[in-house]
Image 1 (cartoon, one colour):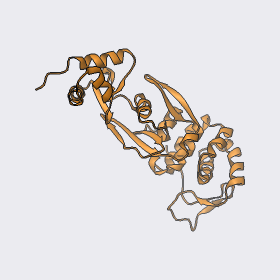
Image 2: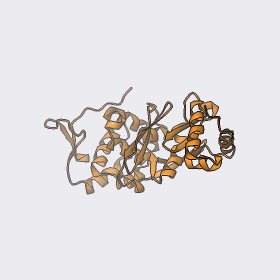
Image 3: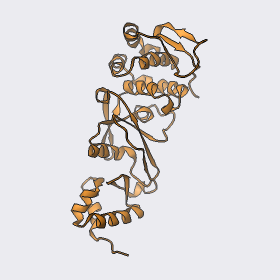
Image 4: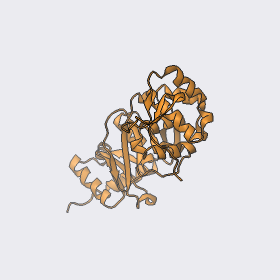
Length: 265
């Protein structure tokens, strides 16, 4: 067995002391002054001992003692650094974003991230990160939240509402969406809702307006309703792929209501 590089532990300790909890394989190789293979051996040994983890190829995080049982840093503490290293615009979205805005009826099983290109899921210890492609990502209204390692970018409450409607299958269906909207509604600004609508497909506005009313937040929808009446050219179904021949119509939203929706208890 090759002896451990005596500087490997010093390297990660010094990083942590300086406030850095992520690094690349190139960073480690340069700091240790060894070959790529030798650096890999040292890093793999530290992974086996639980001191570091590797959420993505060539990218490592230091795992403090309080997160050893998790086997990784929490996703919100390394996703910003990973996305910066990858050069990808991103935001935390869907149920993850809803949780940041106080809609925590169901804690998401995975950390959900929106990107503008395909990205593999991350499995790091018990941490799971799912990536979803979002068109026009660079014009989505966003805001930052503090984490123990810096800040993370999250969709605004209004943009989160639109994404929930646009990614129905990925968030658990219409009943789940109405439940989350009922909790998210108090954070939604009616004027900003229309701003967010301009970055989303028109059918999302038609469905969201109806679902907000079903969630008991009709007072938030007046501006969006005016936007839909002026801009929507076609009547759409609430639930794609479901029968619509006997469904009722919601004229206010130019919507065929082909699914029963009920908030979860």
